[in-house]
Length: 137
Length: 137
DNA sequence: AGTAATCGTGCAATGGAAGTGCATTTCTTA
DNA sequence: TAAGAAATGCACTTCCATTGCACGATTACT
Image (tube, rainbow over all chains, first blue to last red):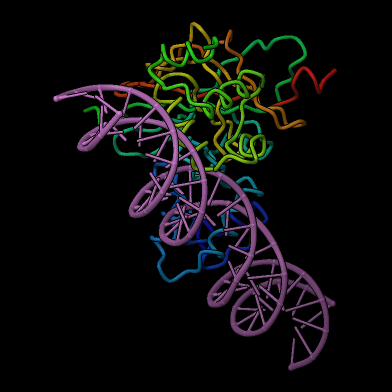
């Protein structure tokens, strides 16, 4: 039993072959991935399985959704100290207008905002678009 | 010729009947609207026409898109001092988890962020989700 | 005024992605 | 090993954005 399997079990997710592969793929990507990306990476697997795998991972705090404004949902692994499982990890996301990849800037938290009276914040999302470090070089 | 028509012309948009109606509808809404909303408001008009009307308005800096994370694009009128036409009006958007409406908080600008080396910001989007002033009352 | 060219509108159809229902296979556990 | 639960695969459906094409309206030009 490898490290990933142990990790998945610690998150109460049964480490099936498919799930191990998906997790490994996500870990190798340093950018957020769409369902389509993953589908292409595993041509043999069914889209629904991958879809539900991601849903499961999301519920168990293994990945979080990234909405970068492109219209398609992306997923990225949660980091060690990430609070996604309680729906409150407010780090930034960066979307590159050149390579179209989206990266988590985990060390950059969303700044505090003072809302007008009567508004109660429960969650927030912030995406910066521009040129990433690879494309600006 | 009414005020709206004059305004549209100043933006180099021909003030057709349809466009006047759409503009009026948007002006009466104090929240961002989806294409579907507008379609329902004008049952007689074709979806495509409304779609292209909004695209035109957007190009000419009359409305801006709002991506509030619900998955469907919304539109809101640009304000007088809004810099949407140059793609750089960085105000906040607030999405109410109760009434599901999205509001522009035009007076609240997105705070400055210091990105890591190599990253160049060109645009950004920030959405706060929670309870709006009407629903929290 | 008349004609060409441009713009706006409506209809039909496409396409991408999310999501669901159900049957089948695989795994766990008693 | 048998029963039940979980995971997987297949076939659909739905929703929304978007496009191609044809027709009608408006403008520009002579």
